[in-house]
Image (cartoon, rainbow over all chains, first blue to last red):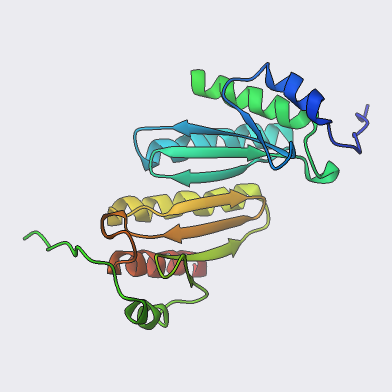
Length: 102
Length: 102
């Protein structure tokens, strides 16, 4: 059974409510994106985290932008089809948070 | 024999001269960085390229910033110790270009 896709972005108060379930994510670009910085010991560990995010993104069918530098990964997610945030972004963010805790 | 580290960044004309040996890289932030966008079929192929860059970066002891999105990797490199560009950035860029041609 195909799930009906939302065609409108979440409103800012809805996004702020969903954000309360996450840890350390912030809204940016007028509530069009959420992002979080994760820190690591070095470049290789940052890339390992990016690879684990990739597996989740493929499984979810929803891909973030990853900004990787020495010892850090900044994850940004938004939903292109609604030009803003959807529940997919919050689901992805929650799964990425779980990764980091392992 | 330890190689003597440069303590000053390349001047803009020097950087522009070295840039001629590369393909599609551009100077940014007042000649403090060079960057290039590489495109791919999807997210996974972009990440595969990022992983191959990581192997080179580890071998060179010089790490770029990678901005990864659906089907693209933007590579940015600069040399922190000189607060600008050094020959290391051009050596890294040349090796990354070779990767993409394979």
